[in-house]
Image (cartoon, rainbow, N blue to C red; front, top):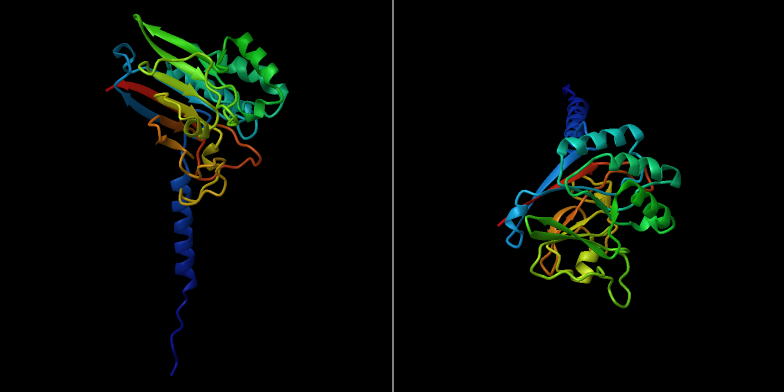
Length: 277
């Protein structure tokens, strides 16, 4: 008896093609901003003064300029920040791949004018050129928070921006901002790695961090080989909480490190809107 042969390769090929398309769609995020997306968070807190209800912060970290973040994308990033018109800009460290790009990067970012200015901390990639970075920030009017605090005031009420000089310093006494901030006042802490927030048991209301790149490569969000955190995926990306109760937002960052590749982890500008509870 002759048996009719069944060709199973065609359906399998079509299925494979469909899965590939779904994978790419699930990972792709298109944006004219020069980065993969603009990611928005709302942070609700009862300690926020009423005068700061609706206050917005644009947070950018890990540019590693130019890496995969090219000059063309830098110009688009600046345009996007201008359109977002935040009350303040914060920069989370790891800025350039070479000293040749320091002036260009900070001159471009400082062209974006905000109500309360631009604030920054250093990352681990600034350990060898921190003096050059700090000098260029001063020239461009960017406030470097180096174990220090900036006071933001509206109609007699205040919030605080604090920054850590080296958020990887955990030995002996954990580094804290030199100026003390009363626990009753709303504080945004800027530190390069999110691990600092957990290890230091900070009481800051909001912590903004980068360093992890969101893993830079992830397989549908189910598995991320490189995490750059002693806490695994706990603070890898997005909004999370420390044991002490601080809200931590970890950005995927903008540029790339080591390998010029991103997969299922889009680069991003983070916009944080503060809301009174």
